[in-house]
Image (cartoon, rainbow, N blue to C red; front, side, top):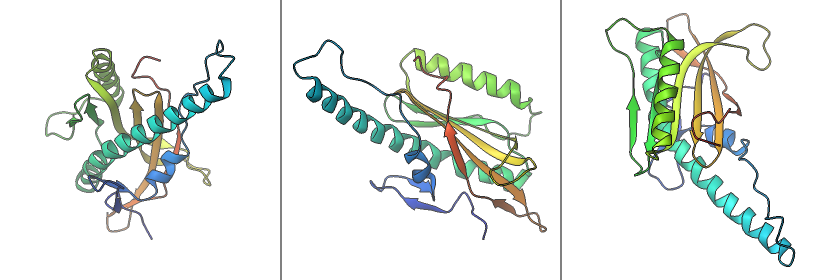
Length: 200
């Protein structure tokens, strides 16, 4: 049975929908580790525990915010693929005031090549991050990819998520079109991202 982008469940707070399996994918991603201050000898264990508690809280927050970005982005990607059988690079940003904004998308104008669009989006994201205007970014595009369990490459939607709390993940959705031209989304998989938007 094919998985569609629009197959989603409600998130814990009920404010946004997220794709099935996506929250589980995020659970496997890792934040940059923070260790206790080396100079703290008296309360070494206590400091480590405090850091761990803060780290887990930040992890929950950044994952929730990335889920919200993914929820806003995936229906747009599905619509492009279903209507045009192609996907033009676009993205979504989460502002410091918690506003989600889509950037780019499909238009009737002549499309630029994906490499140019992706580079421009990344530059724009980095600029907004450097000014402190963004908390998280999502960049979406389509390219051929190796898929776990298969030997040949196939088309896939890549979603690069970056959060200012040192969180970065790339979620990949392989897809194909059925005999009648219908979009079929296959099992997604995730890898750690490069954290290339916010300053390390």
